[in-house]
Length: 212
Image 1: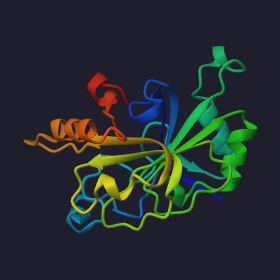
Image 2: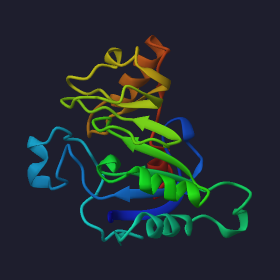
Image 3: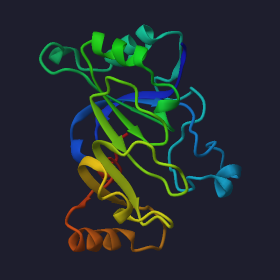
């Protein structure tokens, strides 16, 4: 199987339970909840995405002919001086990574000594072997992944309430303020977490710090 990747880059994880962790991000092209084209946004299931996942023209992006070539390329972004000391950590994201991430690629990552994480909308099954599963549900979609390491709900979303997920089988429960101009979503989210301490606040610290 070949793989279409929008971009690959090395930075710090800016959100959720792994915030601050050095990470290689492998952003796959394509999504099943929005085409990525602005003219389609109003009719999309997910209308608030702020990520460019169209094509393969981003930093480090391209078409990779097989799992091994992509895994080796991703590993090349890890600092050479710590290879063998700290395992490379890759987050497969998108768009929706589970449109492409398969057991062959997960095995290739593992063969290269890498720890594999995903950030998914939870509408597609997770292949065996993923080390860290982060689910970010989107209102209007059918969630089929109701267990994992963390759930990260963008809040508030009309038609999606945190109480809908609190009994699902996740280790960590995060609310992340919806970015909208002229709203008070951060304070609304803070107050919800204070009132419902099962939930913790997640901020996009990479944007606050100006990181990729």
